[in-house]
Image (cartoon, rainbow, N blue to C red; front, side, top):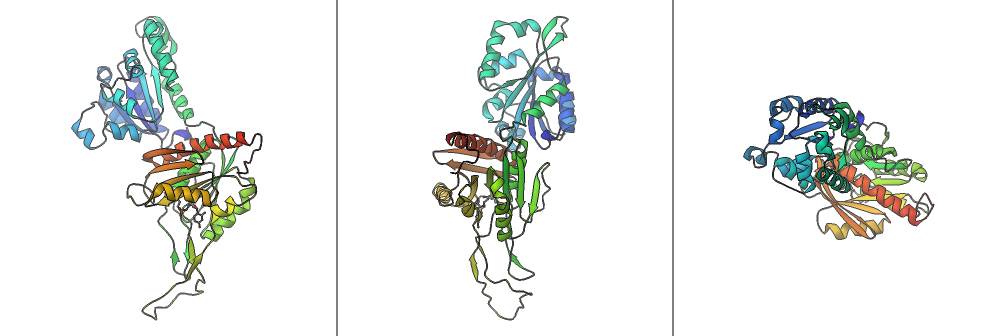
Length: 411
Ligand code: PMT
């Protein structure tokens, strides 16, 4: 299942005879390309050893809330932040009750309280426990809190009784977990993403460029594709593979990126500008290679095309989302850029910090629109991209409905 490739999943295993099936689920998730970290409650360890999950997931198993070693490496806060999804399978009646009541008395329950990732639970218990009035209340409460309850299945149980309470089979869980990453919020829409740096020739051997690796833009193209959009990626010279199902156009200069965008912009619903486009380009690139004949060399630069600004001025412009690479007065500069370039949204990142922004695998952004803002805290660029794409989907639909029936909101 392609949707699981690279996804970061925490598998919580609680005390139930179905814990042995979680081992198979771990194997299937890993085979599907997901990265898995397993946390086990004390009850779970009475049924299966952590060693089994360590071998199947390829990572140490987390069992204790206050574990000096884990806190120095990946403690509960890091685990909660790392996760794209938390899956609890099997989820015992006791664990579901503690989750429903917001308990934080072991690693798994604390992690569930700390994470902003979606939580999915696969109940496993005796059918009488499943039918119990208090369990019904707990399950209703969890569902209303946005927690996905997978199953349970009905049938013969380990205790000999027959009825609902069996954990779903690992293959069924795998399919539900995979599909949860495919929320088709951008179905039927055309999304263009710009990514990476541009290169501006000084002479035939040298150029001016910047540190953009394209990671943020490629993650956005992947997330938009997963959300059901038809995606065109206009990429600068970066060494990244084209995301599955995405059309890619390679460019080198800001001018070429601008042309590639403008050529197809009339058919696009959304433009996401995450590329780091050169603001200034050599005024007259030297035709050959500049010889070292003087102590000083002055290269005259002139302002190049501003792609987002040009698109912002189009009469029937698509919904536009820019990025602001800032180091100070981030709020003010980002909002000013959004207004100047007539963008519908802007995602500001602090590129003065080494753990985010240019080249890093993680990012943190503050997203602004006309009457709101949202902070997406430090996380992998894949996760930030999925969160931002979900937000763009919401804002896009709101803008379209404001312009009732007009598919291209001429904002
Ligand atoms: O590629 P990575 O290594 O993953 O790094 C990601 C990133 C830091 C490059 C990315 O998150 C980011 O911040 N991209 C925007 C970089 C930038 O050029 O920011 P800006 O504040 O200078 O530009 C504002 C907006 O105008 C951007 O949407 C930009 O694409 C656009 N722009 C800028 C200049 C220009 N000449 N034309 C433009 O369209």
